[in-house]
Amino acid sequence: MKIVCVGCSFTDGRVIGIKSVDELYPYSLQQLLPGYTVYNLGFQSASQFFIYKMMKDAIEQLDPDIIIRQITPPYRSFMYNMDKNLNLMEHVKEEAPTYFSVDLGIYNDVRMFNYSSTIGNLYSEREARRSHAAYYKTTHPDIMFEQSEAFLLAGNKLLEGRKSITFSFLNSSTYLDYPSIENEVGFNNDYLVDAAGHFNDIGNRKLARYVARRIKRSEFDK
Image 1 (cartoon, rainbow, N blue to C red):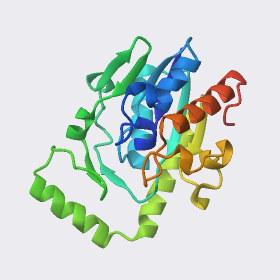
Image 2: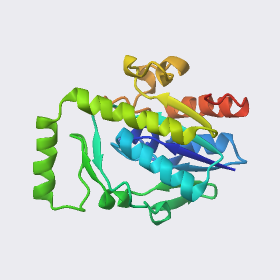
Image 3: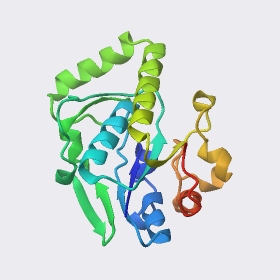
Image 4: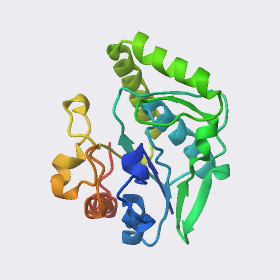
């Protein structure tokens, strides 16, 4: 039985202040569900489009039994060829007998626009920085938001007929159709590892227990 977790750095979890793999929520989830193999396909600074693309390729290549989708903030963008098949197996590494994660080699296959992140080396640094600056200077926030919403809806189509759980990691009214994990689990500053809102090991374990409880009770999204 396979569980795929997709999202941005809140799922990936490899942020400053987190010292080892056992402090990440997908790893804790695997420990709570020993009959499952968990794939942590979270990717730092991923846009909603890239999460959609990762989910699409994971369905085709891994055929997971359950998908856990974490919504990322809307004002992010990735450039990636939709027709290109992202070979996950080139980038997935085994970190424990039944726990796998994505390595950052995927940066070489994408071009991202996000102020908080480095940019993949598929393009020259000079060109990348110029296009990075131009994107945020010329793209209206409403357009970014609409793009994010479009890929959320496209992701919903992918998830039809599959067992899945979708949640937002930020306590935002932007995504009223999806549970805010802070509201559901009752997180506060005691569970944060940095100012960006990433969870520490205690917060990640609480999140893992929330997801595991829903899986055990078969409380999947409709």
